[in-house]
Image (cartoon, rainbow over all chains, first blue to last red; front, side, top):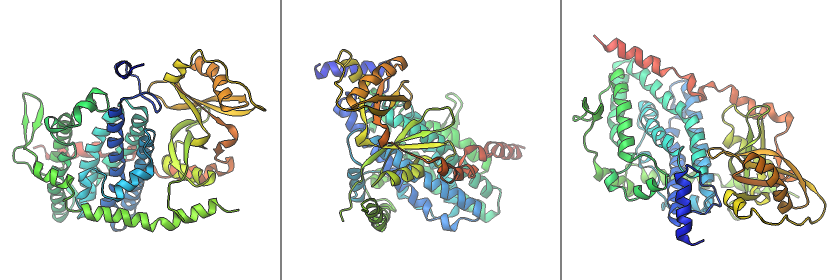
Length: 306
Length: 177
């Protein structure tokens, strides 16, 4: 069959709602976009352990410590689910890991911001995981079987991440004036970077048309961002915290919350490697990889025993 | 020693008695034993598991729906040597994953695939995998408690553990004049 014929057949399969599986014919661009997207997603889970990991030993009580430990452990596991999905497209885990350690791979910019106080742990769960779940729920319906299945698994596990974050924020919101101020400060710092997580406006998003055409993404960046704002504003009102956007107002005509313009210079600066923690995050990953070398060597020696 | 990637193992999880093992993903490991351990750490942080299988990816022979369709009229593979058991996995729903659909006896993977086609056709298979039963490493009955029970004591990993919607509503009401 010619490539044109194969492409037509491929798109007909997508139109019938079929899932593409490893080994099926797919356009090179579909494969390339999926590898790019899934590996970035995997790296984000792995690097995402770092901002919160530092708070495990500083959690305010044993319950919070157990919960945070379980959440960070989940993120490590989610990275593995995603590396698996990317591998089914012909890239190896080793190549992906090397790209990350060499600083050549991208991951979600949100993890280049520091977690400065305990309230940040609450707000990361409430905002960052809340935003991630919207994106991941969409991807659980994507056209590539292994990615969709990894996402289903992740979504099922991740709603606890979102809820434990809201629980921390609720506790602080009902606490002392100092605790309420700490929560407000965290909200002020995380609100805009979270809105940036959804990516550029649809009109400035170079990969979006191909991703939408082939059913990898089924909703646009702006659509998902709007849903996040609409779900989060009433929660902030209930908690009595102020979102740091003077232009935020309810538009009765559309039923949506209107919000101000994102600082795209900051977005591109952090994506480009110049965020508050880019270097620190990579350094921590390299250190973790080096520190784990003796474990890999011990396991290999055990497997090679006579 | 070179610090390089280990072989890949595919992982199959049985969630409840009477349900088939289903494909969950893959792990890398230097041997079968560590693969099972890694699979447990990566895929069983929640209680839904009573049995875990791992098989080296290199030992699995698979065909996709497209290949199944294109090879529809292909002749039966020739037998070579004695029969042994193969585990058969099939993806039978568009949104589903590969599930264990049974066992066939065959002298080679090609023969096993041909034999599985009949089993698979009855199920409307979209993807088919066969793996020699002897290459599958299974969690031991005796290890089920130590391997999987700890997850069931961690209720805080379940979103139902948190009652934030009720708390948010209560706070919202207390703010209204």
